[in-house]
Length: 256
Image (tube, rainbow, N blue to C red):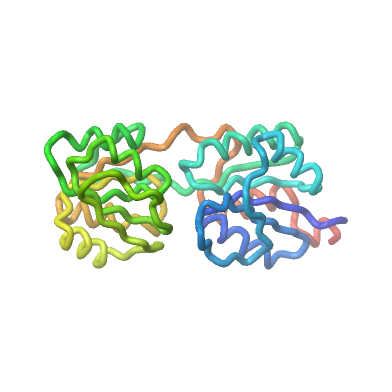
């Protein structure tokens, strides 16, 4: 029997972990797709497709033409348009699909959270009095902060924010996670941060800023996720591997 062809829509550590795990399994051909929004993406353990597909219909054609058997949506929890296209493409192409989504962060005792439905709402929640804000939303939506230029913004992203924010008081940090608790506490203290704006991305790589805020009594304006995908969803790489084994019995059983 021919190998099982799997397209993983990636951009997360979970996508890389799943690709790594499947690359060592007999009977699978893996292609990892990256949107190409990061200038210097991390190295990957399998062949990579860079760029979009042309919406749901374009992705469905790519799946059919490539004779793929499975689509795994392991994109960022806030990549809602890509996830919607993936769901529709799986329906149009008639192939199996599921989503791999890390659990979201849960508010803990001594957390000071304001839960917002969007980044603009989180920026508005900072108030009119000037504050010192750690803007940890990534570069794609950093410009939402321009509606509140009275604040100081510390902006951290993997790639530069271009064009720079049109605000009078801003500082940029180019770093890629994971981040540890001690360095995050030091960062917040050094810049005298009194508020953080962040997405509820979940996972361990960037959670240290949330824990640091808890330790220091800093308010976090956290942006809630949109509704979960309608397709079957798993939370870990191990669960994803189990789902794949259920859909496609191990190679020896398939006679590969």
